[in-house]
Image (cartoon, rainbow, N blue to C red; front, side, top):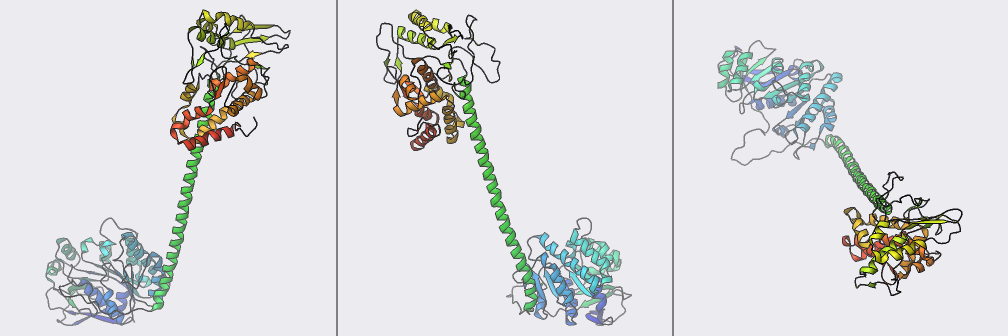
Length: 627
């Protein structure tokens, strides 16, 4: 095989050659030098460089020497008119579409099964994908040739895109340079083709064994010719005819001016004319070759499909995680709002009824407020379960709540009339008398173990301000405020809510955070549940009766029916906005009205009814459930 040659051109009669051969003398190239060496073919567009490459390939294929062509412009498929070449790439015109995953199989077909291959990268929209395919195929060829050591030629069109002069060479260019430097010893040759020699890395050009210089006209390119061949050639190359070239080889001593033969197969790279384009009949390759590559394609598509399914499943899980995190955050927000609501009620419950500052969380309980005692009587001590919200008293005998009942004038006439809007209409003396009654209801009493009792009135200044009209009744009430207790200490209680009515409570509760249904339900239900048992039982009695007196509600809640205790507990419910005074000592159940103020403007009537029912059920106020 070492003596085999291929004839590709004839000596030209133009000036500039130094061969000493007469015009028309055939020029042959040694096959082994072409297959294993490094070549460079250059010339401006239309000068014949692609024709020269095609003639060399046609001669090699005619002698059953396989090659691999990296086709950047899709102009070599015309070789299929005469030869069975596997055409792979990205276009539908290719025998099969391939990617870098096919590189190993492509190299195996070319080297091990002698299959000539056109690696058409003109159809790849992604330049990186095309570059990856070229690089991986070249790497696989180089790796396999280290073992096979079989003469094989790789031809690369537009090589300046991969091995440029100056900076910008990527991994693909470095792989091609590696083949140019070390491929020869393994049997792997490479030929670069470019219309711009000035843009091709000079280290590659100067290492080539054979070079063909077609017509060049640009100064930078002719300077390259002058630097490598000489000034005479740099001037003469501008006047070369189509197909003419200066042929420079390591196996010949002179530079020859030659005319390359015309290619025999369809010229797919020719400039289109006005005539209709007729695509020739192309030879098909064996179906087995395509099927081997198709197996890789199918496996890749299956893998991509599985990856897509996994990504989709992962996306769903990620979305579910985001949803759960959002729901968890909303649940935390609702819980925090409910806690804030309950804490607000508890703080309100610790405020004094008249003129005091109450206890703030974390404050010093020993510091008296504006309404504290002056030392004439012992300061009432809080007992375990002091607050109506959260810390209930043990029973009615353990703590005397602020006594409250409708005022009846001294002359025995009926109490104040009920206005049309449900608010008592009181004047002068009647109003003052009722204010005095409320001060008596705030009286404190401490009974010593020996049965004696001392009483003082909390907020006496406020009682004095009520006027002379109620002073006598107030004094009389103080003297009779201490019931018989058989020696048991009875400590008075301040208002546990701090609300002056439903409007005050609703105004306090109103806020954006309570527009959430769960926050409203949890907050109101928790406030009701925090009431002491008998007090909560009274609220249930109001719920069932709709309207009744505190004494009747107290008895219905298994209380003693004592007026003092009944009205003290009733005051807690009234101040929280759960009940409202109507007329003649009767109070009405108003928890639904409170919820309507808090939540009604943010929902429709049906939802509001459901919210009220849910609160009553959760707090144990449902009429079908025993208190």
